[in-house]
Image (tube, rainbow, N blue to C red; front, side, top):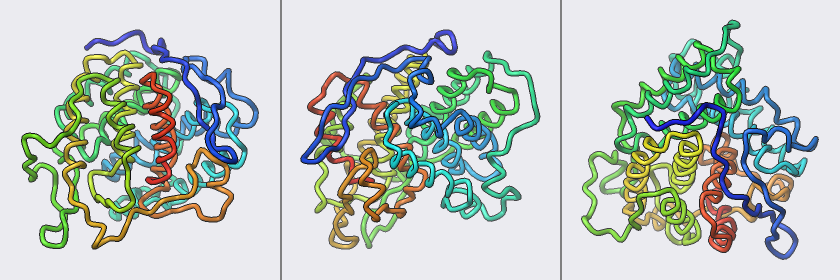
Length: 364
C-alpha cells in the first residue's frame, strides 16, 4: 500500500476561510494544514484541546461493543478538535456551541449510542474512558488502512467506514503517542463491522418505502459527473451543495452531509499517504453520489427542506436561539463543519467554495 511516513502529512494549498459577516461573506485569512497545527491555535480555541482527540479515539475503539454506527460518537469528538485547528481564531460562541454538542454526545443524547444499541453493557459516557496505559506503536496505524481496504470496494453505510477510519488515521498520525495496541485493535474491530454492510438506504416514496442501495438498479446514464480524482470529486460535491433547492427533498444515503464527509475523508486519506486506497474510495464515493441523486423528490410527502438562516461557522447560528437538533445533527454538525473545510481545501476554486458555503446552511 502506497503510504508515507506516519506523521509526515502532505500539506494542501493555503486556502481562504469564509466567515459570515453583516451583509454577506468575507475572506477571513489563509490557513495551511500542517503537522504543527496545534502551534497555530490561539487561546480562543484552546478549550477544544487534546483531551477531545484522545476521548474520541477511545470511543472509536470501543464502538464495536455497540454497533458500527456508534463510531459517530468518537468521530464527532475528533472532528471538534480539528475544527479548532482549521480555524485558529474560532469565535468563542462557536466554540461554546461545539462544546455543548459534544457534552450532549458524551452525556448519552446521541441517537447512535446506547439508544440504538439497547443491549450494550456500556453507557455512552463509558466509551470515552481511558484505556489501561500501554506503550504506543506508530507502526500499528497502517493496520487501520488495511482494515478499511476490506470494505472500500463499494459504499458502506453512507461512507461511514471511510469517515471513521480516516479520522482515526489522521488523529493517530498527528499524535502517535495515542497509537496503543488497545486503541488500534478496537478501531480494527469497528472496521470489521462494515465488511458486509450495504451502501445504506433511501426513501423511495410511500409505495416503495425505504430500500437498501444494494437493491437499487441505477440507470446507465444518470448525468452524474464522472470523476476519478480528488479534485473532480470535491468539485462535484460542492456543485451539489450549491445546487440545493428547498423544493427538492431527497431522503436517504445520509444526504449531502455524508457526501461531504465521505469526500473529506478520502481527501484526508490522500494527505495521510494512502494514495492507492483513496483512489479505490473515489469510485465508491461516486456510487454513493449516484444513489443519492437518483432518489425521488418526496417534498409533497415530507415537505420542503429545512433551511437554517446561518451556517454553524457563524456565531449567529449558535446565539439566535434556533439551533436544530433533529436529523442526528448532534454528531453530524461538527463533523460536517470539519468535512466541508477539508473538502474545499482540496481544490483551488474560491468562487465555487464560496457558493457552496452559502448553501451549507441547507443541510445544517
